[in-house]
Image (tube, rainbow, N blue to C red; front, top):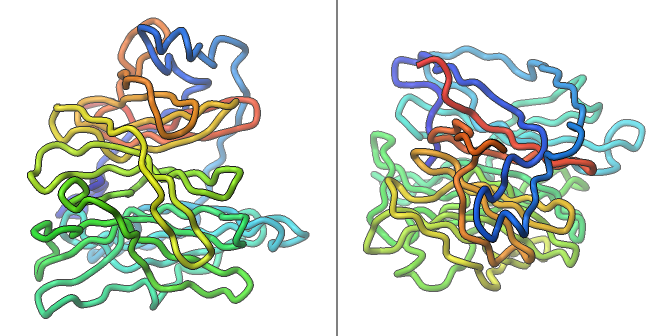
Length: 335
């Protein structure tokens, strides 16, 4: 699961966020480098960054966590997009999260409503001692069905907020659809996956996923088999009809026998190629694909001169522009 940015005594840890212009030596060495030339070799793509405070709330019981946004075209002011942000409360135990909330702006961030609790997406009880929740959520627009789709991880909490992984699919892919016409969220549903031994735990958490031109989904996920061991990463191809998400197949099974393995992958498409960036406890990894399912061997992220990018035990995410590709990541800083 994700690292928390607030520890048990509620102090905050400082991180340095870096946006890297272009693709930074996506496949540093070997055949993959020849097939995927660096996108950062030309003039840097100019960009501006503006920081706005969307919501400020201090509490000894929680901090707001995992804010992620998705745009719904054509229903905002003046025919522009509405933007929905999903978020939840991080509670006083590591990786212990509330049910889902959402915020919304119809004027590109000038004014926001919420956070609004979603009863359909709140905790539910499995038993007196076990609570079911969904965390690490990423929303995205599915144009063919006119629905906003939120994808995350269902997980089980014990009485003290600890995560339970003792049964198959204690962690599994959860999804919920938002209908902008009715302003209504459907309850969480679970993706039916094959091979319980291989996919004992299924975790599409904190990932960036894609909608292909044919409407199918490419959802990167990490998973662990029943026998335990490090996490592996793959990309799921799924259908979504506006109500039900259906597994069709999965791509290469990417493994690394190093610490917790490879996890929290994020996927983007740029200039006819797919790019997958993956978290590891020691560094970030990257690979490319022509079809979104079959990938070249993963390579550590480096700068063009071969030096280490400096990403340490954190997620990396893509910012895709029509004219260039950016990587957003945290890196080693002071201490």
